Image 1 (cartoon, one colour):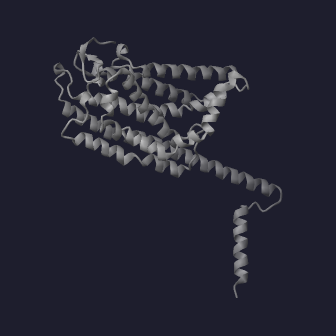
Image 2 (cartoon, rainbow, N blue to C red; image 1 turned 90 degrees about the vertical axis):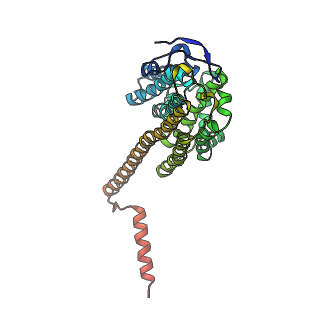
Image 3 (cartoon, rainbow, N blue to C red; image 1 turned 180 degrees about the vertical axis):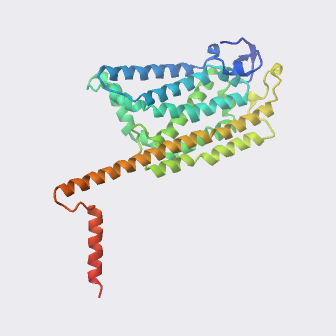
Length: 331
């Protein structure tokens, strides 16, 4: 479903639909106004499926849930960049904010839960020649100092916060909205910011930096108050924050200040569900890790008993022996 695009353009310099927004027009596809980011999502889905086919040819199975998650992530990127959310998002702050929140808070979760790095490491050729270069490059990135810097919370958390305050509370947003290239860069920035932030927290794939489950939960919560406060500021502001959304087409009968308030409410509300979802995933991983550790200890104890040994935990045995020595030294 496409829409007529007239000669009317806002501060962005890019065309917006002539017809006023309705639920059907916002949710329907508008491929004529699709961002290049939408086609990037299609390319990523094709590469993922090619990797799956390569594994299938070698008789290697792959979890269906991972495939579903990754394709859902690609579909969400394509949808918000190739529907009315893309075209009407050129003139309405609220619609743009939906696009921003999905690309930063929702799409990365699907892409990361699909474990694309693990799939690539299994599917890419391992030869020492040119065909093995992509896999070697990927491994270098995972073990490089640059990778550790880009995945450190001292980088990812400020980047996440800057994608809100630094973009909308400065001239950066209006500058990026002035061209197709700038707008495309902004959408990619939102997506990459989410990937860099959630990647080390979810830790589904191999990652340059490894943290304990508790540290990952804390890292997840660090930007939460900044995110909520940003939404409140936008919601409560009595003046327009960005020029690009100051003059929507008059025929739409949209109050830009009221629309800005809606954008703030969307930003504020969007932070809860992804955070709870990721917390649940990390907690589940933590629980499984503890279960595996306990089973390993139990197997070691059973092997010790089978050898005629006591089967007690060596650390506990050493601790008890130390207590006995201290007791013997007492007068």
